Length: 416
Ligand SMILES: Cc1ncc(COP(=O)(O)O)c(C=O)c1O
Image (cartoon, rainbow, N blue to C red; front, side, top):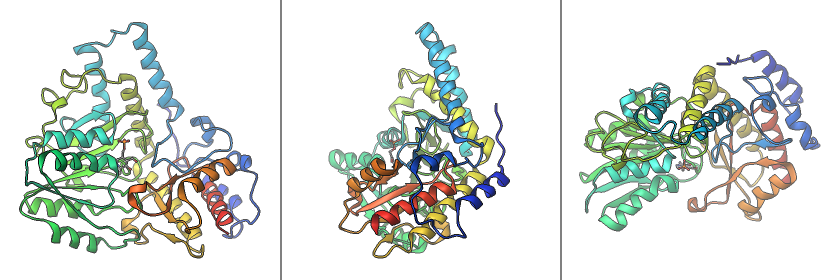
């Protein structure tokens, strides 16, 4: 496998030429030159490693991550081989054993045993599998937050609608900056009927990193399970499911892990496997089994390749890089008058996501669309369920300080 060096020297040289004494440059650079002058932190030239179109500034991994070219090559290689004889990998010694390679890589990456790791299609499908496998009944309670993404909450709403399960939501106001307050609200809301706490590791709305280890401990002390929606954390920050102490953790392959679209991972701890029994894995935890049906083998093997790349760089370095960029953006956006950064300042609560509240005269979706049309800057408007007029930036391994400076300059200019 190709190995990549963390080339600090190139990185620092790049920063030095990208900034002018820490002051933002006033005139907008021609957009196409921004990407061209950008060096990727870990691999030298992003255009060698990714398929980004010319001039694109991609700060949108929280929505969907890019696949690296080597991931795409691996995926296509498997797919082409499969199509040379469609039944080639069919059955026990084909797909079943091949897909297991990715299960092993994923387990190592998230810090659990392979017997606790399952391959899914997405975070949503993982969360649905957990909910379906729990056999909840009328009167059981679920504790969650008012900031969950649809992919992590629809499953509980379903059980509330059809099975009489009660969903209790604690509030996490945009701008929340205290883990203590979050834990206090959870403690006050827990009841003896609470069967599980289900929260995002990193909130999709504001990027707040939840204190999962403490929440897991609260759940355990209450005899409840702790279920984590990890869509915005695996690949973005270091994740070790054993250190988090959670019982289940669902994540997406196609966001921060930079795997093929339509892939996902689900961790079910040994302990939780007794109480969570999804239909598709009732018979076997193998990816390809009678309960799960045919799977996207090429994508799954591509996901393994993508995770191996992150491992080769090191999640400690990736997290540091991502948070450094996020903090730089925070520093540059915080001075915009009348606007507000909704993401935490407290470092233990930060993640590579940053959300900015827009002034009322701008509507988030059309604002984001116009940024793309004018500057080829890709970010995301906050989901409407979160109820605020915000825009979200995602900082990942391939992003650079120069791109952050460019995005910030664009925002300053548009909001002036
Ligand atoms: C917190 C959270 N959960 C779940 C999802 C859904 O992910 P997927 O499309 O992989 O199911 C997202 C997507 O943005 C998310 O941010």
